[in-house]
Image (cartoon, rainbow, N blue to C red; front, side, top):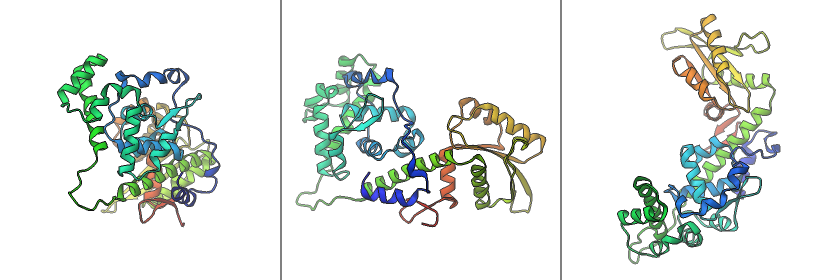
Length: 356
């Protein structure tokens, strides 16, 4: 991690988080690792249009950001497109998989990160990566300047790979956007070329925040369940809820925290909260359990909070209940920062330990 990012993270992370031993969340299994060589086929040229995202992914790997949700948020993509970008980074030789399925930054990737984002030097490293990529060899003349329109490039991909026209066209779009990025912005004749530091600063803050969120979640998973419930109660108070009471325990009836919300007209609405400090996805039975308590005890709202995520069945069960809200780990950490519990947002948008 760059010194600046390391300094930010050291100040931002609650005591005890830095001792985590590096459990990886985003991995490939052994079967997939055995097929890594397949990623270098022309057939597998990915749909990953933004080279800035490829760089951001390489930097995230270097910085130790491995939580799936953090990576998706960092790149602002869904899971499918994240896999495309990871595939693109492998094809370009800036990251690689080790024997255990972990992702490592290559020497070429280190050279990429030593450049400034959007700089001429960065484009030179990317151009070298494109030239070395086995999957892109059939397009060497295109990247060297051969004039090919979208239709011609699509047809070439179809012939080479057997892909459908629609898929080939999407991947042709990626190749066109990569070449456009490598060519760089048009400079005015005789004009002064100055680098814009904003993208690099924004990327640094985004990676720092992703790392802090990941470490905060891991710390939350390590605290005592009663402590986690207390943090949930503290968040409710910070959000403006009143009469916040931590129940918890074996006789809690499926409700760990209760609170009340008073609206602009003075009406009082009681909320039931269940807090699950889990590493695995929370299943449907906990949704059903909370809904049962919500109905029996006549609460106006219900909230299920976890450090993990929710199974598709749990999400489906909650979908038809407008007064039940699910808060996964990523959202929970965002809420903590937004309301100044454990974390706060600094002047540059960076997450910091509250009080630091």
